[in-house]
Structure formats: structure tokens, C-alpha cells
Amino acid sequence: MTKLLSNPCCHPSSSTTFSCFHNESLCSSKKMAALPISGHFSKWPPKSFTRIQLRRSDFELRSSNGYPLNAVSLQDEGSVVNPLAEEPNFSDSAEGDSTLSITVVGASGDLAKKKIFPALFALYYEDWLPENFVIFGYSRTKMNDEELRNMISRTLTCRIDQRENCDDKMTQFLKRCFYHSGQYNSEEHFSELDCKLKEKEGGRLSNRLFYLSIPPNIFVDVARCASTRASSTTGWTRVIVEKPFGRDSESSSELTKCLKQFLNEDQIFRIDHYLGKELVENLSVIRFSNLVFEPLWSRNYIRNVQFIFSEDFGTEGRGGYFDNYGIIRDIMQNHLLQILALFAMETPVSLDAEDIRNEKVKVLRSMKQLLLENVVVGQYKGHSKGGKTYLGYTDDPTVPNNSVTPTFAAAALFINNARWDGVPFLMKAGKALHTRRAEIRVQFRHVPGNLYKHTFGTDLDLATNELVLRVQPDEAIYLKINNKVPGLEMRLDRSDLNLLYKARYTREIPDAYERLLLDAIAGERRLFIRSDELDAAWALFTPLLKELEDRKIAPELYPYGSRGPVGAHYLAAKHNVRWGDLTGED
Image 1 (cartoon, rainbow, N blue to C red):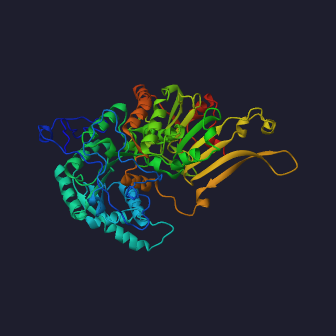
Image 2: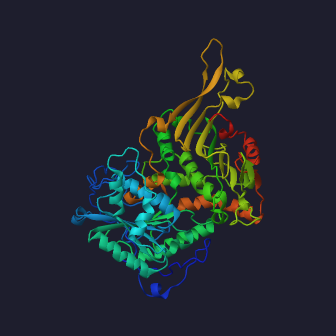
């Protein structure tokens, strides 16, 4: 069964435009086989491989939430349905051996070396990968298998609770790693990769996962080459795509349109690694499995919610890349907005991926237009502290001297529905600030007629209960409450009911990439972004970004290592909010 492509997408001319062209060799009267998104599965026998259970009595897929997956997930309206994307055929061949082939495209890049290969090794070390698997690195860099192994071995680490000799496990893992050098737009080179994959797969039923750790302007090239020359013909083929997913609504929509020339929506896994963070995963558990919280989760008891992201370093040599995007595109439009949608969504019908993503999309579509008057932008400047001089953003030689790209942004957003009407959702993200942190802060309303308000003086903010989920560093959940200080006098104190993860749990917390890679292998899409979700997110931020850039709004300068621009405090005060991370209590 085949899929006719009359206008496959070409190599984009820039990172912001994804145009299409008519290629006679691919299009004129020829048909291109689409990737099968469902295929046969077999038993994977590693010792502790319980996260994915492969039979439907026996043959039921489970993922990070422990919930059974649907065989076919929701298709976007208007998308072309792949005729091969049907219920898996659990025939006799499904009971035979299968193999998993993972290709890291852009294998010589920093992301691959620092995150992807270490995450794959961690999954192997913990026995989460199937018995038969192979990993290929693919990039333009000339190297051989041994050079790839030497490169990635420098970033591999073992778990704290070592059960086996680390060196032996590392050696065994590296023996599964191979390399192929090629151009990203060369179908010939991907055909060579396909031959190597088949050789390693040894005739077994093959499932293939491609991780695109590359700039977005070559996503479509790789999708085209992989789909036509290196996709599995017997099992599934999936593609993980790293952000940024365009720069605005138009470029994002064009990128999605071009990718769907070669892939179905069910094959595209748009990764946002923040959704794989342990505390973000725990957000829904805290809300939906604790009676003490769910009844409070509305405008009746919550007066504001804050999503805070700060880094204590600047662009650190990434100025050229960062200047094309800025902090709003880099952090707010994806990481923080995704967490907001998870926080504010209604109770889903089930834990199925599509039910959860449907509720997230409803939240995004219910949000009021983001106005410039509810946004503050800043840019860090050079500063001397403790005898050390820190360069400003425009001091970076890769950044234009007159750049107005924000390295800091704060915004007040509102959701126009019955649950959240009038509640300000404040976002704040910045580089070169006084500390490194990412957290969600829920500030509750004051107690009506509080009998003890005189004890707090005139500052009722001190009497506010606050729930804090610290995503990083030092993962923790704590609830600020008011209590009496022991003694004969009536003196109140604000204390924390604290769950500090490193004190409560002895096991090392898995990296977000480990969870997301495992979910992609399992076909669990709950933590990946659907195309309509992406459209709704860009629809919210694109008008603001266009206005900032068209009017060349100058960012407020703030010293490197400070708490950010003063304007962020005025923005919070305008909505009767005090930033929770600036009280000095944490």
C-alpha cells in the first residue's frame, strides 16, 4: 500500500522558511511508500523490562504512567491517514524475534554527546531496552565506529545503585553502537545506512527510531531521506524531533506541513524535555490522586500561579543561535506553556495520551490574547562581582552590538474559562540571574476573616499558603503553612511541610531524556506535543513576538547575576502578586 506525494518538501533555504518544490524524480507519476506507524511486536526479554508489556493479555503496551496504550491514536483533522497505520497484526511473526534500531541523527553534536547517548546507556544499564537493539550515530563528521565509541564513552555514567560492574556494562553497550557518515539531504547515504541497519538486524522484525538532534532547517531533508530509504518495512518507524518547532505560527505550520509529506502525525514525536522532568510528571499525580488538592484547584481558592525558570549563566558561546530566538521562544512558548497547560487542564477522561492532550489543547485555546502591556522584557549587561567581571549579552562576539533580543521575559496570562477566570498565571524566564531554578508556585487566597491576621501585621502576603513544586535543582515539593511557635506567647510562624526527594528516595532520579526515549519506544505520546497543540501555543505568542520585533522594543537592562529587571516587580504588583522566589524564605 502506498501513499502518493505530489509535492514533497525541499531543503529549506533558512531556519525560518520551509518551502516545498516539485521534484520530478520523486513526484511525477511515481508513488512513495509511506512509513508504517504500527507494526508487529515481539517479546523483549530483559530481566526488569516491565515498563513495556508486549501482549494483549500478555500483549498490552504500557508506558511511564502504567496505563494501557491505544493501538491507534487520534489523527489531526485534515491529515492524510496512512493506509498502513492499522491495528497491529499479531500474527505468528509477532511471536518471533524483533530488534530495535535507534539512529541518532546529528551524533557528533553536543546534545547527542551530553544527553541522548548517556540516556540510552542509562536505559540499557537499568535493563529497560530490549534484548535485541542496535544504535547508530549519523552525521556529516568523518569517523569510524571506534571513534564514535571513544567520543560517547567520555560522557557515560553509571547509576549510584550499581548492581553490576559498570565497566562491563559500558563495554557491552558500546559494542552495540555503530556509525555512518553521510549528508543529511542524501538519499544515497541513507540507503547505505539502511543496508547497515539490515545487516545488524539480521532478518528479524525491525522497529526503527530516528532521533533528529539537528537544526530545524534540515528536519525535512532527513524526514524525506529516512522515509524513502531507511524506514522499516516490517515494523514501525518513528521520528523524534527536537525544538525549536519554527519561529512563529507561519513557519511552524509550514514545518508541520512539510514533515507530513513524509510522516503521519502518529510517527512524529515532538520532544519537550521539560515534560519528562520528574516533578512535572508528578504534577498530575499530586492533583488527581490527593483529595486534599483537587477541590482547591480553581479560582475559588487559588489567587495566582507562577512558573519560574532562571539560569545563573549567560549564553556561554550560544549567542549566535540564541539571538535568532530569544528567551520567549526558547523557554516560555514551549517549556513553561506546556507545564501551564498540564497544571490548568480539566480532569481527562482517562490517562490515555489523546485524552490528556485533548485537555491541554482546550486550555491553550481558552487563553486570552497575550498583550504587550502584560509583558516585560530584559537583557543582561556586564557586571563585576567578587573581583570577577561578567560580560554582557551584546559583548558576545557572535551577537550584534545593537541586538534587542530579550534574555529575560515576564508575562501575565489569563485563561478564559469557568475554573480559572481572573486568576493571573505569571511566567518568568531569564538568563544570567542570581540563581538557577525551575519551579511552580501556587499561591492560595487569604483566609476570610482570619482571626490571627493581627499577628502578621499589615502584610497579609506573609499569611498566604503556598504550594511549591521545585523542578530543579534539588527536586522537592513543599507546602507553606502558618503555625504557632512553641512557647507561652501567641506567636505565629510560617513553616514548610517538605518532601525533599533526595532525602526521601535513595535512587537517583532518571534524566528527562531517559523517560521520553522510553516512551517513544513504547509508542506512548502523552509527553509529546501534538500538532494542534503546537498550533495553539504559537497562536498565543506569535502576535506578541511580531509586535516586539516590528516595534523594536528595547529590553530593560539588568546586571549579570541580579534578580532581573525592575519592571518584572511592577508587572507582578499590577496584578496584586508578589514573586514567590524573591521573598528570601526558600
